[in-house]
Image 1 (cartoon, rainbow, N blue to C red):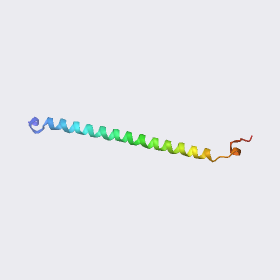
Image 2: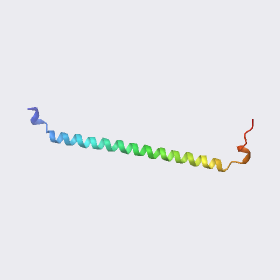
Image 3: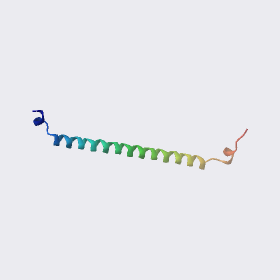
Image 4: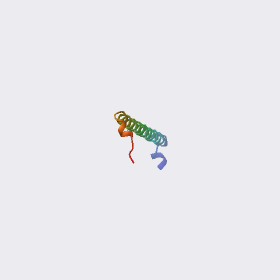
Length: 64
């Protein structure tokens, strides 16, 4: 009786679609996180480069 109420083909299709959707969202999350980390790294490198460009010779001399 229960078998007649449940259509297993439709359930398998729903489970497959849900798996594809979850996997896609997971991969998009990884990609966005990587993109943000690359952006932050580039900003830090630019700040470091700009800071080094404007230093004078006296700033590089260390005093005991």
